[in-house]
Image (cartoon, rainbow, N blue to C red; front, side, top):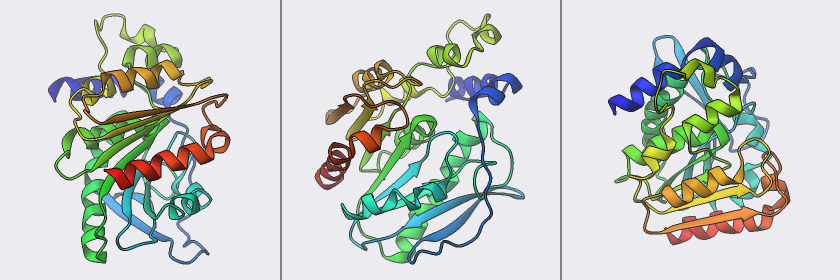
Length: 264
């Protein structure tokens, strides 16, 4: 894990952070909708991450979800009903500086914070009597903490779902236009998605838009090929870009997630 840690430290360069993160803050008001719960997870002294829980069934599958860049947990008030429709309890986590969370985002913090968030959610499930299987899911930027947790907690997680995720650190740096900062780094590790997913043996589902203009579909295909899971599935949605993959492929998308969580 030392290589992963060093890779994260390099990615905490101010120019990388400026280009990578687009935080949007919100007040911590309770949702007006019933059965939507705010939860705050302390990840460091004086720093808490805001999360949003959408419970629907005590025996339903449970997904801890890391959202994409520029999004917040409360944005999923409009998406959670789709998961409720397939009997899934959704728990959406923000990052430092996003939504209801305090602090400022860094690559290192995003990965390290995923662990206390995971432990808090598993405690919440135990306390609330939720008996269904636990899954981890990440969209776009959120693919990094999702793969991190899948890598570390394979004995506790039933499956990994990655939507619009990235594989290669080098290609990610090129997309951000900051590869010049890493001229003397032979093989940038970054978040290590491509390295970690090789060791993830639990069932895995990869979803990607075929016309993704931000993270090309080739990245999703690379994650699928690299995955160490014996049971893995891929869904590439025709005509979908980066931010409309759910909208354009809603039926296929939700059917894939529902089938995956039931089967696993």
